[in-house]
Every structure is written in structure tokens, then in C-alpha cells.
Image 1 (spheres, rainbow, N blue to C red):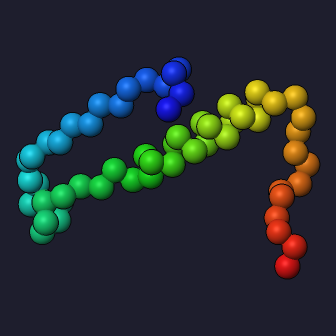
Image 2 (image 1 turned 120 degrees about the horizontal axis):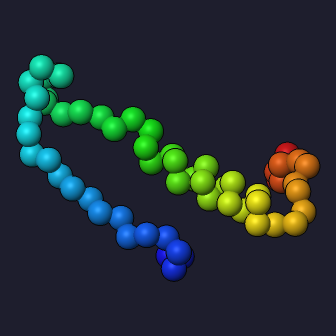
Length: 59
């Protein structure tokens, strides 16, 4: 892991909410995808050359 990246704290809240759904669970949406966009943008701004096209294998 990068030395500049902060530690991640994970907390579990054990409170069921039967109003939301029968299981009493709630989703967190797409919070996991935030890191991928941040890393991509950091890479784009860090390199001097810009990629004009996506690199794809020949089919």
C-alpha cells in the first residue's frame, strides 16, 4: 500500500431496521468505486504523456 494512503477504519453498526426491508440491512451504494476513479485521475495527472486511445488486445 502507498505510504501516502491513510489507514482505513471499518465500523460495524449492529442495529436492524425492519422498516427498510425484511432483512433489516442497508446498502452503501457504489462507495467502493470511488478509489478507482481517484487512482486513475492521480495517474493521469502524474504522467507527462497523455494516452489518446485505449490499449486493447487485437481481436
